[in-house]
Length: 91
Image (cartoon, rainbow, N blue to C red; front, side):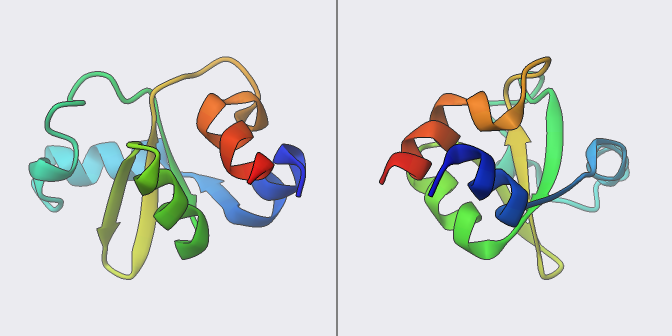
């Protein structure tokens, strides 16, 4: 699977505003993001398959309310270019 295809199929929607608001209102446990607090630049709703693989790569994943959010530590480039996405696509 190519990295672009992986993103098209598994990355569902940018939810930075939603997750930031949930964190501000303490609706999500901070242990999910604690050593990354302040480093997450974007939050993306993703499917469970990708969440599991990103977790293995040491990425920030929130698993709450039946949703999986990826705390992307980069911004400004296409998601398919992220190193973790490239690695997962290559497997």
